[in-house]
Length: 88
Image (cartoon, rainbow, N blue to C red; front, side):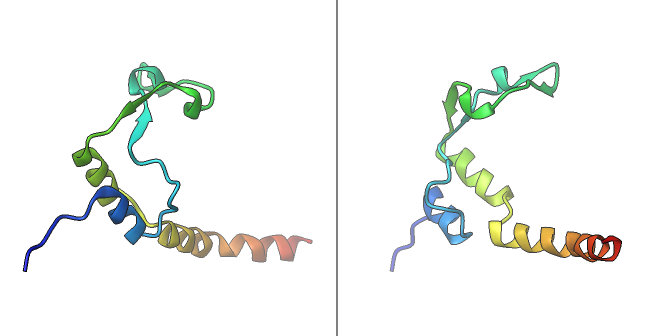
């Protein structure tokens, strides 16, 4: 029996990221930040740089699954719905 490492698209899919989630490139950080602050504007319009397979896997390992992120956001902000109802 042989084993192989999962590729980054497989790892992201295992965490329920959408299939069209961009994992192979990022906006060029040299253009995205100036003096440590993100420049205004849409970062999706900046030139992009490719990520190595190692960087993609690292990003996956540091990510939070969209399902868990949504659950955390709903749990942390559920009280606001009650406050809005009480204020009405």
